[in-house]
Amino acid sequence: MGQFGIVVGQLVGFLIMLMVGYGCVRLKLYGTVALNGMCALLLNVLIPVLVFANAMDGATRADLAANWGVMLLTALMYALLALVFFALAWALRLKGERGRIFQAALIFGNAGFLGIPLIMALFPGHGAIYVALMSIVDQSILWTYGVYLCEPIRGAAASSVRPSVGMRAAGLLRRFVNPAFIGIMLALALILMGVRVPELVLSPLHTIGAMATPMSLIYLGGLFATTRWWSVLRRYELYVGLTAKMILFPIGLYALLTMTPLAGVLPVTHDMTVMIAMIAGLPTMTTIAMFCGRRGNMPEYATGFVLVSTLFSLVSLAVVSSVIM
Image (tube, rainbow, N blue to C red; front, side, top):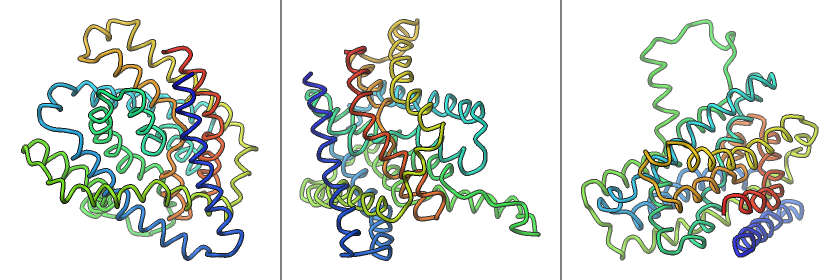
């Protein structure tokens, strides 16, 4: 029940900040223009600074060598999530943007705003290093494959001229090279070189990064007020996807890592296994709604997944915890 209490505490704070954002828009304190500015600030400044500060604060070369199993588990989790939900989207006959956003919403869990506080509370001894190493892999995949899944699909008639290989490569780099990804790579390079950022610099970066959580939730609350997110409740894939992602997958991943020969092959501990199973069952990452909102690519669909999955997590995380703990 201690773990359940931690989860409930995070969700209560999450919902209060959502309500603040929703109320501000409903009271006409600000509107779509302000929301667009908040989204740009979050994606280009606050979230990149948060990721960089977290990575630099908790990891050294020695930590990488001793706990690299966390990075391996995180990569394995995302590979399995991508495979499972690509197959599920195909089985449910979800095509185009709908199929891609369905995958993004179920592959990427809210590791930043729910996962990090949960890990820090559950594993006070190793939580900081787990978070730092997990974030390197998690954010690298989110800001590359996640961005790709949330991009609108251009129709064949959009252009009569087929782009050259060089133009397509440049377009791919522009999509993947973004402030958050640059921050991750910079942090990883500094860690490998043994460079330590002085606390005098790191402290204000943490303060700036800490603004990302409340502002992103206030932004999302405003998005709830300006989009028809409830339309997702009529989508059959919502219920299939959330059951698969938030209950069946984390329990299955835990079983795979503990009851198969993988357990004796991979350089992981039981705490790492429990941690990654909990991360696998988290609700949809709020950044997915931001990616879709900034491009006008079915934002109500993505926002609906964020809200409903967050509410569902109050039950699903308790179920998963009772099985794996």
